Image (tube, rainbow, N blue to C red):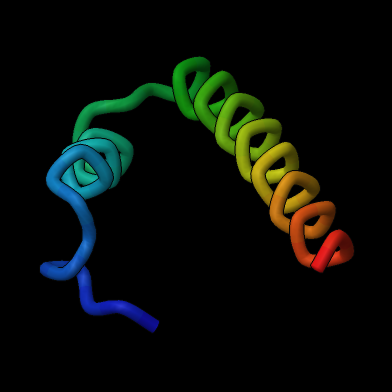
Length: 52
């Protein structure tokens, strides 16, 4: 697993925002968006892997 300092600046900022400033409604919205994006990316990578 990567160390926190090794992640891109945008990810570090997002994680700090989640930990420090986000309220419950924002956390729920972020969770849904992140889950959806991660799922789409995983599916895309799996399709690429199968094509090889």
